[in-house]
Length: 274
Length: 247
Image 1 (cartoon, each protein chain N blue to C red):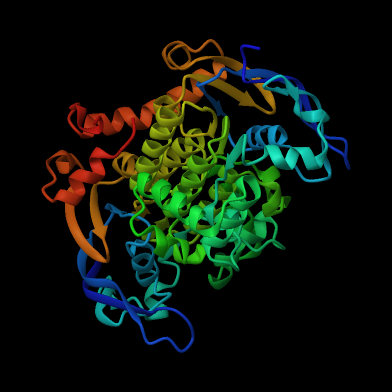
Image 2: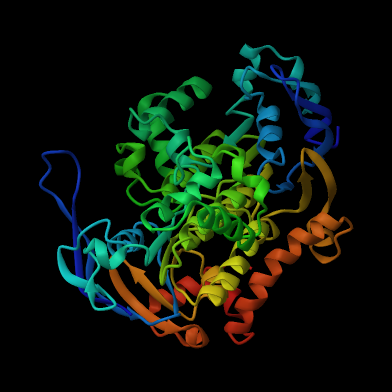
């Protein structure tokens, strides 16, 4: 198997009403590469991600094959799937506030997850988390672990999730709009962390976003979705340089017009680049 | 037209009996002329939304004054129909039991206008924000983000205000819809000759719309610059902000 994850004929529909959300998509993720899924809201990006993790709500049904490292995920029982989640497939959510349990300090969640997967002792977990949190630029890891989610900012929670992913060392990270809820500065820092994460662990990634600037920076391959259908996929350069599909061109051009105006204001100099 | 002088604001931090006090805004002074568009840029937690609420008269400053055309902004009469707002969260800024036409009609109730005139006005407003009259009977949950934000805008301009405070009005929209709403804001501004206070963390969007920007950090004004002068910002923080924009 050359592909890490192979999705074929994935169909997702609402079990109650029979409405089809994703009529049938096929794509694959190569080992060590980053696939970005781009589209407007309601285009079925998040549902596709959740379908890979098999985390959709009970009312939402799915069919098709999800072959991960030669194993078909859609045939696994819930119990087997639970073992895979986190350890081999790790998901990073959009909203940090909702991803953590609001009634416990952040550390409790981390302890629970790591004990389940590795069976480490408390000290071991704290030690490992300290190193990981240091590497994502979180100062005072112990203090962060003893805080409730509402006491931390969105960017910090996002980085805690990345730190957890570093410790878990999954083969595939599914990041569902991780930067959308953040302001410019924390967005920059979080994207930076994602790029370092890939460099350090060589894992594959599925990165969902509607922000093309971020996608361009991080991804190797891009897949454009509209109304549940994949309209175009290809390498990142190809999509941004000459998109074949009209919708992709439209998405690229709208972002460009904002950016070009900004460049004009800044006098055309490369201030925006690092 | 709008002048803010030495405004300070404190919040109690923590629980009901907590003594900790957070200094949210520190000595803020600026002014905004007729028909001008001012962008307020800052990170989350920098106090920019608090400043927006003070400008709208929803909250009272601890010290300092905010004057709108010479009258204190806390005075309802000075505000009525002349300042309006559009917020980020489009799902919660409309009454879920109202239809679109009722949403737009709400601010018009205080004006003494006849029934037919109101109906015509609603059609006209919907047309101006790029929607048609079929939207009148829809409920907020039936609208997409961009459509809901357009309806909020129609409601905001219904009384033909002189100033609109836009608090992260485009931040939760998709890239392609953002640009549509920005273009709409530009055209509405020409149509009504209004001023905007555009609160955002997105410098590129602010540069697209505004005449000048105010960069705010930890409740203090870091720098104020005309858009043409944006490339020559002096303070270290403003430079950092500009460097961190992703292209």
